[in-house]
Amino acid sequence: MDLKELYRDVIVDHNKHPRNFGKIDHADAHADGHNPLCGDQLTVTVKLDGDVISDVKFEGSGCAISTASASLMTEAVHGKSKQQFNSLHDQVHDMLTRHDSTIDPMSLGKLGALSGVREFPARVKCASLCWHTLQAALQNQNQLVSTE
Ligand code: ZN
Image (cartoon, rainbow, N blue to C red; front, side, top):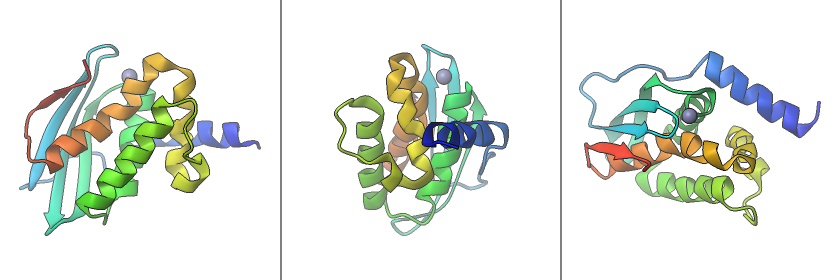
């Protein structure tokens, strides 16, 4: 199995069986995201322990890429501080959007599976929606995020 197949399997798995799907009761922060180009919609809820993301969930409906990306993100950011999240957000954004990205997808673990998205510019917003939405939630902007 080559890396492309492995990455494709990760996306398929996380779309079919999204992790941390649902809503946290009494969340400390939340935000809604919308990608009108594709119709992806999601709500992210976060529980904070000081500066650390102690729990994060998402719900909504979207395409396979947006669902898989949100599922992978919730796994990846669990237990991370806001600063660590911002750093990871920047690395993922770089990997998703820049063809000359110096980010090695392998260094991001399962999140590397999203690297194939940069070959499909129309899908970049599907993959980045959850990241923008969680970022807004952490900045306490409990507002609607639109990728437009
Ligand atoms: Zn989409």
